[in-house]
Length: 363
Image (tube, rainbow, N blue to C red; front, side):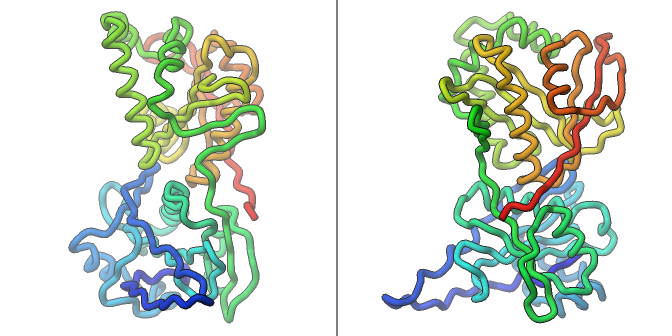
């Protein structure tokens, strides 16, 4: 899969400002490693250029030409820690509108058709969202490049017209926080500590904690519990930028941190259910003072919107004990499909639900 955008050429900025000219576009921000459990992107490292050049094949040259002798894309695409292509964004083409970036990619021939290009493009969208500099990503795709045309439409890019022999597509850079007017999901902060500790009651521990975690918590004194919870919040905040797990605090209009939701795209427990890495396992807990108000159901809807905007995950999964009626109500509110029933390693009866993640256009 390839687009005409971003050939990974070295960039040199030669724009001279005058009082009448607009400021030059913001340069690309270095890509820190991001993964969805299936595919990863990271900034190029010494020696990567030779691998990228070796990965060029006739299809690459058909759509992208010979390519740069010194490729410097925004990021290399990795699968199982091996480079399998690149993804790039460039704010400088003069046909872009302010705040837009031109996106391009290439996946080596042996790895095409496995979803890596889609996932790399969406991880790049997450990178753009994290830095908040650009407002939209643009793809310019040759009319005869069927694979890339299908990718753009599958990922919810809007068709914007034609340019020479290519079709343009655009998608807004997604927000980091989502709201429906009643609840808002956001990145967790260390300031959430007091509410987080209050939420760790017997009900949460019963349904969400492993037996060994409950036992470890009981052996801690209050100071140790507070320090442990703070470390978890710090880790939640840090991994929000890198994946494959994203954890959200949920705020209501009249209270903060009324619930917590996480989505894990590399959950080992789903592998036994035939779900590959890259699909989302969602779990959630409500603060005791705010249970029964529908906040969690609303928040999970918003997390699925986050997944649609920041990842290429296709399904959201929910593994719930059959006796956990409150969590089952959340699954029903999503109209989740019952995928299977099973007994887990602790002997608990479980229901496995799934919901498709749909991507709509954003403009």
